[in-house]
Amino acid sequence: MNTVAEQVEPLATPEAIEAKVETPFQRFVSSFLASKVATAALVVLAVLIFMAIFAPLISPTNPYDLAQVSVLDSKLPPGAKSFDGMTFWLGTDGAGRDLVSAMIYGLRISLGVGVMSGIVAMAIGAAIGLIAAFYGGRVENVIMRIVDIQLSFPAILVALILLAILGKGVDKIIIALIIVQWAYYARTVRGSALVERNKEYIEAATCLAIGHRRILFRHLLPNCLPPLIVVGTIQTAHAISLEATLSFLGVGLPVSEPSLGLLISNGFDYMLSGKYWISFFPGVALLVTIVSINLVGDQLRDVLNPRLER
Image 1: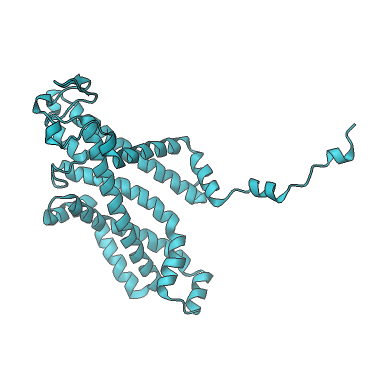
Image 2: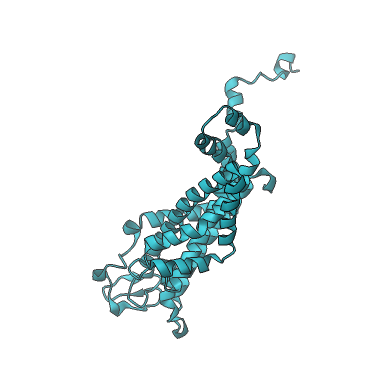
């Protein structure tokens, strides 16, 4: 028979209690990894980012080095070999470039354009949205009317007009995408900041004569980050697809700086002749990239907003 001392459970030590309590970061990670689809999308996205960063190291060839490209190897089907014995696993394009190498370099340009334009547009839009929500009145009315006017036009139409003025180039298309995207961030931050603007801690900071800049960026902005992060992921995918569309139309990037959209455009003329692989594989890479970013953003939305968590 068990004694009373044996039946009583020992008191938990502070170390054991601390080990059982999850930190906010651990809860965030466990909630995000609860979705197998989002976890798989995050792994795929991490692989794509790794390939884009280390493209010169992992790419079989430099597809834009004329010394490594032969016109005799143009439009070879997947699995074909060149005259020097090199195997082109996904075939070659019309210029004789290895499609695997071209896609890795194109992914580097597409992700770089999407991320850079998204970061700058987020910073500009967040600052403008905070100013509109904090000051209100005429300042808010002027800012939001400008936002409404811009959002009333299709994003691709605004980008086409801007690129017609600026011309082709990576820097030009980044500027165009920043101008197209900042209004989305401004509206999102303004809506979140309006909720926080009337709370006690903001009123207390105002009564204590704390500087407006400190209130905006030390108090308001941190509480607006969750929706801002979600919109940032979705807008990054939108920027990549928009850049691909513009490059496909021939108004985005020049031939010397190709993206996935430009690779799809290069193979479009050969589709009717049966050489599908020139456009098909870059299109699949673009689709996988956009879907992965959207799935990660969708899971972030559920995790950062408990009311939406399934």
